[in-house]
Amino acid sequence: MVETLQKSLKTIEDYKAANPHYTELLDIMGDILILREEYRRNMKGSIFQVEENLIAKKMEGGLPLIDFTGKQYDLTHPKEYFDSLISIAEKRIPDAAKSIAAIIESPQFSWEKIIRASFDHKIEESDAQILEADHEGDENIDLIDLFTEESLRPELESVAQKYGQTVEKSGWSEGYCPICGKEPKIGEIREGEEGKRYLFCHQCGYKWYFHRIKCPFCGNEEQHSLAYFEVEGEERYRVDVCNKCRRYIKTVELPKSSEEPNLDVEDIATLHLDMIASDEGYN
Ligand SMILES: [Zn+2]
Ligand SMILES: [Zn+2]
Image 1 (cartoon, helix red, strand yellow):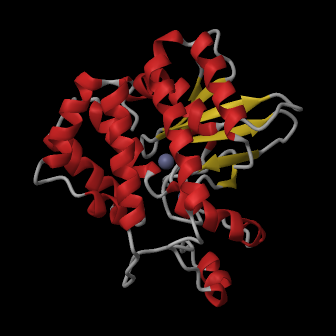
Image 2 (cartoon, protein in one colour):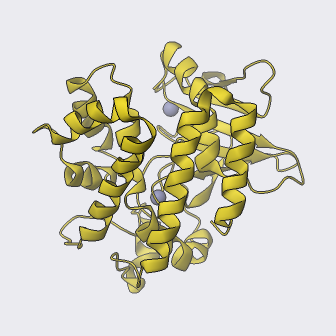
Image 3 (cartoon, rainbow, N blue to C red):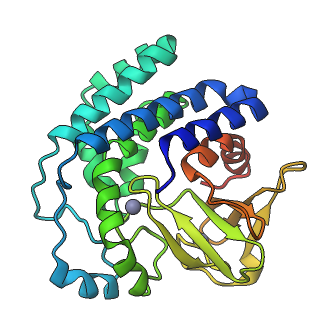
């Protein structure tokens, strides 16, 4: 989170050189980071208010800090941000942008509905599936997902920055994000930190501690039904799978003294791992 924009953009250039087939997506990520920084600069406090007296109770009950139940937030700026993210697609991938526009303009699509659903880890899946069912096999869905998730990032990131330490001390042990409730897609483990792992939330940028031998999605801790696979020549990454619920999460394996990785970028540079996991029947 503290990483400067310049440094992140440099990381993207390095990744482009190493993974030329991801150039387009990494360029999109670079554009996102520039817009995100601009949003941050113009922000005057978050639209999300945290009831500080409820933090301890919420954490104890497994409830994320921010939720939408019975609350009204002014989503004007995030929606404007979403629209400007869509214009990145128009600039970078004009052909796909047409199909993206068609999906967004279709009556089934509701940005606000997807946003609300993402705060409720119980219904998140079903809502994403509705969108996917209507546009099966359309790879642009993933990009819309990315933009939708990103549209709240600056607002939520400021909450995560303000309350992150308090949350960390609370001993949160759920597999979904303590700040916003979103499920993780990627995590990191570090050499020498046995049994430890951190899960990362793309929606708010928060990273939280989670047991290494436990499925974040169903809580399964039985070693025999938890496994992981790696791709030859890419030992920096592995995919942790749970054979009980058939879900998976990507993991970056860091050497002892390595710098903090940019997990937004890592997620994009490892999209082939998502494809392999999906081919293997994991979701
Ligand atoms: Zn989050
Ligand atoms: Zn599981």
